[in-house]
Image 1 (cartoon, rainbow, N blue to C red):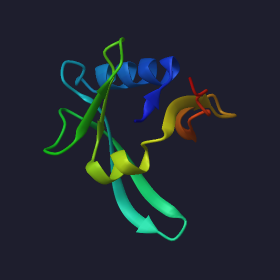
Image 2: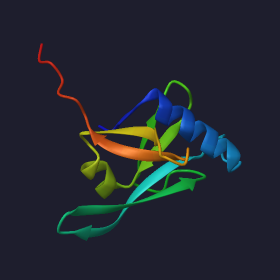
Image 3: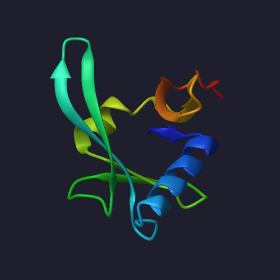
Image 4: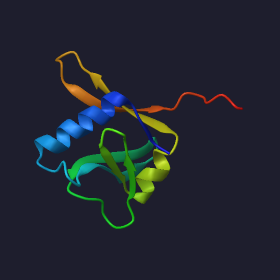
Length: 102
């Protein structure tokens, strides 16, 4: 399942509040196109999940809606936020670190 860093959860909460969609809204991932190198993901701020979406939430109230194909693609990933050279925040999808086995 997609994991969220604290920074990503804060950024999602701020983004949905800025868009006036904090109550039920969240960040939605959908697969736009399949390519040889992988899936092309589309990000949007949505008022609510669409039918069939997987809904993830954080303790801080941030919500992520995953279209079924996107949920499968992001199953073993972590959503984070990184700052670029201009100071802009960008969402980044990275592999989850290996979990130690018990």
